[in-house]
Structure formats: C-alpha cells, structure tokens
Image (cartoon, rainbow, N blue to C red; front, side, top):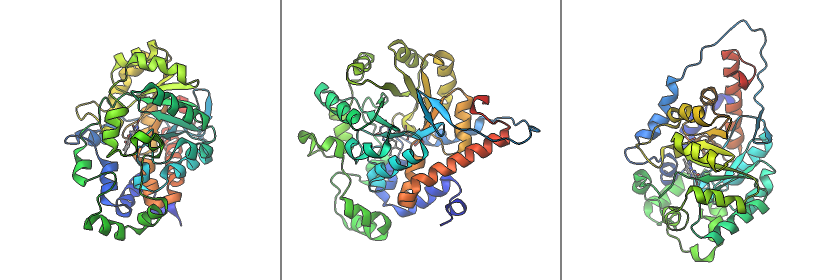
Length: 373
Ligand SMILES: Cc1cc2nc3c(=O)[nH]c(=O)nc-3n(C[C@H](O)[C@H](O)[C@H](O)COP(=O)(O)O)c2cc1C
C-alpha cells in the first residue's frame, strides 16, 4: 500500500487510529488531566515558534544523523516510553522496538509496559532505553534494573513527574479497568474493531507483564493503583544519586520543567534530562514543555544532555525544539497512532513521515545540518 499518499502526516495516522481501536484504548491514549487544557496547549504552543528561511544556497542535502550521549542515531528523535502500549495494539512494544532497531533510533520501554524487557531487549539491539517508575522497595528496584540491563538496555530514564498518578478523568470516564469488565459495550467494541481484537485474542488481554512477575503484584486492579502504591511517591535527588549503584549506563531524569530542578540534576551528575510535561497527563497547570525549554537551556546547556518531549507531531516541531536548544527529542503518541492505525507497519511509517518531513523542512529553511539550527 502507498502509505505516503494515504497517510502523509502523523495526524492522518491519528485519525485512522481512532477508527481502528476500541473507545477505551483511544481515550486512555489521548487522555490529559483536569480540563485538559495542557494537552491542547502542548500542540498549539509550537505555532508561536517561527524559523525564517534563507535561500539561494544551491543544492542542499540534509544530514539528520545525530551523535547523542556516546551513540550515533539516524535521527534526532526517539520513541518515548508509553505504559500499557499493548492496549492500543497487541505487542506494540515489540513492533516499535523493531522499528527503532531498523532505523537506528532509541526505543524506550516503560516499567508499566505490556511486554517484558526480556521479550523486547533482543529486538532493540543497542538502541534500547529503559524507563523506571522509581520503586519504593529497593530490592524491586535492583531486580527491575538488573533485568533491563541483562536484556540489553543501556540508558535509563527515571521519571520524575509522577509524584502520584493524576486523576485522568477522561480515562476514568471511559471505564478502563484491569481486568476489563465484560459488558455488552465491551463485546460490541471488540466486534467492530477486528484489526485490534483478533491479535489481542491471540496475545491475551494486555497486562503489565514486567511487574506481573513479582507475584505479590499479580492481583493488581489498575495501572494507577499499582503505580501509586509501589512505583512512586518517593523520588528524591538522593534516590537519583543512589541509582548509580544499580545502573552502569547513562541516567536521564525525565519530566523536568523548572530550571532549578535542571540545576539540581546537573549538581548530582545526571547524564541528561527530559524537559517534558508527560504529554499533558499529570498537572494541567504546568507550562508547556516548549515554553519551559529556553530557561532550562540557559541554565544547563553543556552541563547535561537536554532532551525534549510533549506535543511533537511533525518534523517541523522537531526542528523548533532543537532550535530552542534541545539536543534530542522523544515522541509518545505519534508512534502509537502509527501502530494503532497500521499494526506492524505503523512504527516504520511514523518514522518515515518524521524523517521525510524533517529533511524537507531543513531544505525549506536552508540548512544542511541540524547544528545550523
Ligand atoms: C498513553 C501514554 C502512556 C504513557 N506512559 C508513560 C510511562 O509509562 N512512563 C513515562 O515516563 N512516560 C509515559 N508517558 C509520557 C510519554 O513518555 C511522553 O512524555 C509523552 O507522551 C510526550 O508527549 P506526546 O505524546 O505529545 O509526544 C505516557 C504517555 C502516554 C500518552
């Protein structure tokens, strides 16, 4: 199929994804929190950043290869960790890990993924990042990190911006629960979404397979409850420092917006930070990440690696974030739209859209190198 003409942009994948998956999965993916003003602002705040093109430069061959934290990636973007990815499409983690390996970009596996590090690791080669929701229990932490390391993940993202799960009213209204309640609506949704239902029946209903191996968590009722009880609420700068004992690779703190937090991360020697508002899912009163970025760049650029996420949907958005001083970016929903819309072809197609759009816009702007931003 000619994906490029049928789905030329991430927004086309979004439209298609909405049709292809059950309502509850869609609402979980799209959910912000509160009145959801931040999820909207995350998208619109990019519009205020303009880049003035320069012309008459002859032929331009854009180079988007990026050296970042000791690794060469084929693009300045990677796949953000998405908990419960398998709810949107069974084995989405494995599909996206394969995409990342094929295009040599990083794939981040969430602690609350539906596939384990052991299952995903072999597909990511050396392109895997592992995301940690910080366990209260240090033995659990050690075990999770050892499993990720032994499975081939070498970069650790520790998520700071979930002090407790947010209320996510939209997800609640949609009635997400684990195990799912078998209602007439649930069955009907399954019947009208065979693209989702058939592979889901084959794989089994999504569960948090990484943490389910710890027997005491097997009866957990929901992601929210589990994260609240065992995987959050204790993160401190001291805790981040302690992670050095359990992790030999790079450590990146994900979810900072305040310049003083960025300073603190530098002070304790973190290798990188992700300027992010968690895709607008945690605190509706927060600034957009793109608004927060310049001040953080002013404070810590050159002292720690700066990654950006929240709201990126296009190659142009990637350029905008890089032009404000980010060195690398992550996208969450964009890749899940791809997989939800097109199954095993969706991750690759999302990457192709973004790479093509990025290169095209570099030529429009008149630059061959991302450094020129
Ligand atoms: C459905 C969903 C689940 C997410 N799960 C996690 C997670 O498990 N861990 C984490 O650190 N961030 C998680 N995030 C946040 C993403 O990693 C990323 O910060 C966010 O999606 C970026 O915004 P974008 O979706 O606009 O690209 C999640 C986001 C979404 C949309």
